[in-house]
Amino acid sequence: MDFGMKNRLSRLFDRESERAVWLAIDHGYFLGPVSKLEDPAKTIKPLVPFTDALMLTRGILRTSVDASMEVPFILRVSGGNSIVGPALSNEGIQTSMEEAIRLNASAVAMSIYVGTEHEHQTLLNLGKLVDEGQRYGMPVLAVTAVGKELEKRDARYLSLCCRIAAEIGANAVKTYYCEDFEKIVKSCPVPVVVAGGPKLDTELDALKLAHDAVKQGARGVDMGRNIWQSPKAVGMIKAIASIVHDGASVKEAGKLLK
Ligand code: R5P
Image (cartoon, rainbow, N blue to C red; front, side, top):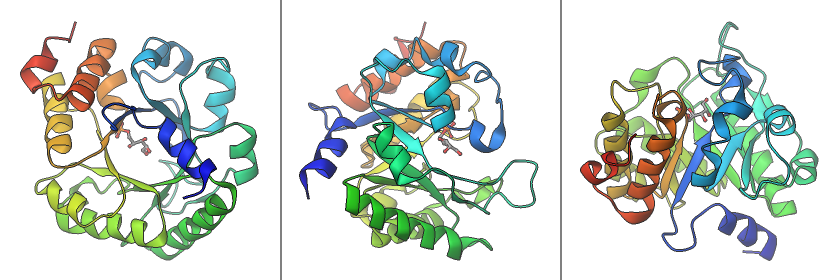
């Protein structure tokens, strides 16, 4: 692996644990102003010290993030869809590689929609993004999106998606946690991180998700709503970090919730 690619990737993972707590705040690219992310700057400011990287769009980066911050970021570059449009899967690339480099991104991220009417275009988009990423030393994170079909989140489907993303050349894959999650990790040759999905009933449920995912081989989390939609957001990210980086149990991590 060339220096640029290696260097960017190394910024995204904690040096000691070699795992990652990424804070996902890219939801607005198709959901608009989701609850608790109406004012992204206000939401993320207290959370930034506890994250290894932010995941966001260029619009929120430019308007809501202090350029002197030290935390790296993963730039969401796919889009072209909306929650009120005809098909969430109808995504293209909306931010160029040149822009990602100009902004000093440590990786770019895009969604693939396997098994949908737009499977073909999103997989070819991933291939093109990986080609560009290889040309410029920019890692590519593939997100195995399910849109509104949350029931698709099982090991058979997600292992298919993750493996396809890795075969096309993604440097890392973000997917959902599910039963038999270990099977997904074992058949995916690049690091797998988990999303949190919609807000779970309790904070402990989200801590358990992170704990079980890491135990079964996830390299960390790329979590959003279960952190910043919690009334204990700072406690949540600290608790998640203790699980991911320090191997804390759910009970130990729960003590950090305030
Ligand atoms: C989803 O479209 C976004 O890519 C989010 O970054 C992703 O779903 C992770 O956030 P959450 O933990 O809220 O699911």
